[in-house]
Image (tube, rainbow, N blue to C red; front, side, top):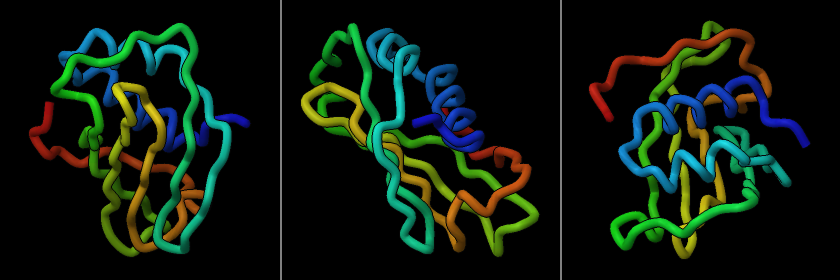
Length: 113
């Protein structure tokens, strides 16, 4: 299963903005294995290979991702990367519509790093 354009961009943003080498390594090999649309976003189950578990501070998450906006959405959406035992497990996108309806998007400046 492929990552959607929004998912791929969010994970790339997280990888570029994290200080965790382990998180960068896991995100470099991440794949989507399942996706559930909720009507107000989605949960995408992720799988990574050849990973190293995170340091204690990042054992469970979530890791804040960027907020994003799209012309097809009623308002901004947020993103959270969930971890389990130091391993990337799920990407949550939450907004007012399912991300499958998004055609074009941009990140909002939230001063997160």
